[in-house]
Image (cartoon, rainbow, N blue to C red; front, side, top):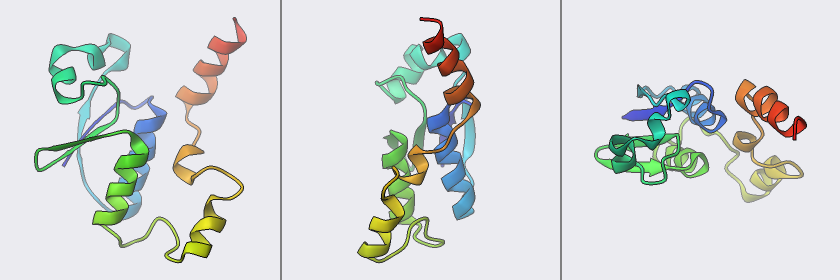
Length: 119
């Protein structure tokens, strides 16, 4: 399994957390957003959206962190990231967004805030 990722990407961070919690190893493939490696022809051949993360398993390419995390949960159910009953899952999601959408990283707090604050 290969995870195409960048250390400052909040969406990539979510997938790394899920992999870690599940005890799964993935080969870390650096996609340096600072040098726009995600816009390269090679990376866009893998992921036409040109976004990180992308998870590759047995030739299947998965993109978008919520979809990747859901796939990890369904294909590796133990340990579970979420409760297994519908009522408990609903309580886990309410009133906040899913835990993997709520994770803050330096890239989603400082840099984004500074960009917004200066406009």
